[in-house]
Amino acid sequence: MTRIAQIIVAAGKGARLGSTIPKQYLKLAGKRLIEHTISSMNSTNLIDETIIVVAKEDKFISDIISHYKDIRIVIGGDTRAKSSLEGLLSLSKNPPDIVLIHDAARPFVTKSTLVDVISNLKENTAVAPALPVVDSLKTIDGVKIDRKSFFRIQTPQGFNYNEIIEAYNNLSENITPDDDIEVAKLSGINICYSEGDPNNFKVTYPKDFERAKNMISLNDYIATGNGFDVHRLTTGDKVWLCGVPIKCEFSLIGHSDADVALHALTDAILGTIALGDIGDHFPPSDPKWLNASSKEFLLFAVSELEKRGGTLQHLDLTIICENPKIKPYRQSMREKLSELCKLPIKKISVKATTTEKLGFTGRSEGIAAQATATVKLPE
Image 1 (tube, rainbow, N blue to C red):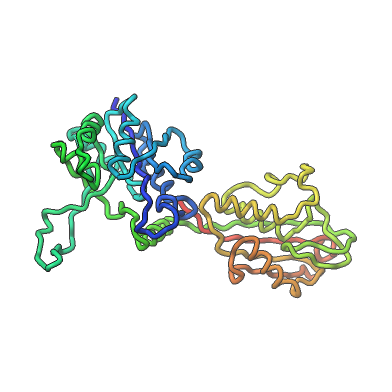
Image 2 (cartoon, one colour):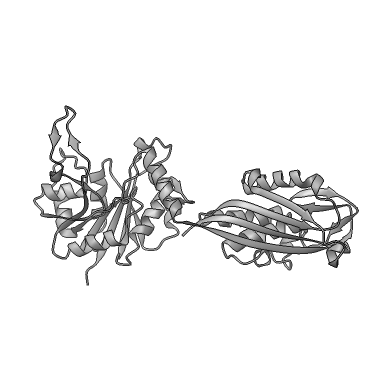
């Protein structure tokens, strides 16, 4: 059975993007760019081993790979070629039949591109995805060049492992190749080109990063979640609503601070990511949460949403009670929710209504709240 390994080269600094951190670690839709690349490269279920080549001073990769299995980290060199060689050498104790070498900054490689490269390696030693040049080509002096002779070369580039590592071992130190397929060519290996993909571009400049963000957002979907909560009233001196203390002659009964509004909002956000309800995460039987601030519950839900690459788009809250009167505090509530949820105040609605003296809220026996959260999530 053919054994396939992949090397993802992530040792570059990405200086042309102008970022303070290497471009492969910039975040796109809540995940670092390299995480999108790893997911794309694992879309075939054909890979037996993954090597990620990083710079010696890398501070990010250890946290990232803790979420994945069967990934090894290798320290690269000071050039792209030296980093590829380090990755190849790390496979020498248990060499694969085929190796794919891919740029970490190409997050949009498709399953069909991968399968095409691997399929072409059945009868070829070296394969690279390529795109024809469609624009006119001219020299700086305006001399026309026949574009039919040129291709745009992408990664992953696939090789017979024994052939490509031998080619690298024989590479002159005076030569600095642009990619791995050039090393194969210099060694006399015949090259085959598979069909490239315009979306499999390398994130290099700021406009590339913006394009990548736009492409990922095209795959986002909108989710809504609903929350509803009720707490009984008792004698006291204040109630907490939306994290705002309201002085009055009663209080709400609850294991925590009984902020019925924040509880409804927490459940609404948890609903958007199908993560159960507030009682699953903060059970009233747990003494840890006795008299706890309900802000903790809301912040937990927002954090879990962000971990999944989600972003809040809008919150709509209705508080149902006879007393206290909500309108004098509505703006303070919106401001507090904006602070807690890191959401512009214009995207936060707080409303109040009564039940015309009907039911438990009409009899001032309790306060109810219902909420709807709208979020954007990656597929």
